[in-house]
Image (cartoon, rainbow, N blue to C red; front, top):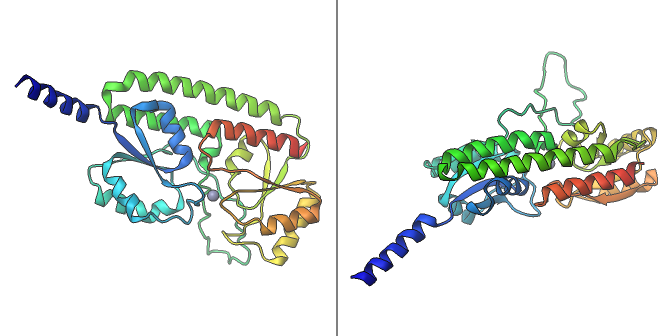
Length: 285
Ligand code: ZN
């Protein structure tokens, strides 16, 4: 009987202390949630390494994994529009958390609306890359803290401490980036896919995108970009691993600049932004 009771209590505590799971859309969000939850929660990511959140579709196995999630943290990216309602309807118990609640989005650059008739205002597409501005990540962190606290009230104290620490590290990161980009003389950079709109806005840089409305630029569009790049004395073309490098190489050759790879979706978000700032610093001086 005693042995049975021991076994019973062991099983009971295993279920009690089984790690809860939450799901996020993109890899940097996993980093954000983990800064606040640390090892208390397992974080599952929908858009895996090498995929673009703008064109992503979940695999059946991933839909299954959602069934174990207590919450879904959305980021407002393209695929969510079609998929969030499905995630919710197949997992009615799952808490849906808008992790960018309170963030004012800016217009996506690189969408040329030439030939539009007046009176036919097409709503401008909003830039989804909100996770690349540290100040906006502070808003996300707050939303994550609130959601985790309501889900797992036992750990509120720990979450709050971790949150405070995360916010302090973001402030340090922001100050470091500010300082390293202060002396940069040429502030324009070319980028294949315009992921750096918020980063550029925060640190007074200008991104010149190659992609036009989500497509590779046509030869005449490339010529325009090259002309503009020369005028702005841009010397570097950034590409991300998720996108084509072809037109980036063409432009780099034309402006006598170089192609550098930066990944807007890396897991080590803090390290990655520091590194991006360093690359900008040495490439734009
Ligand atoms: Zn993107």
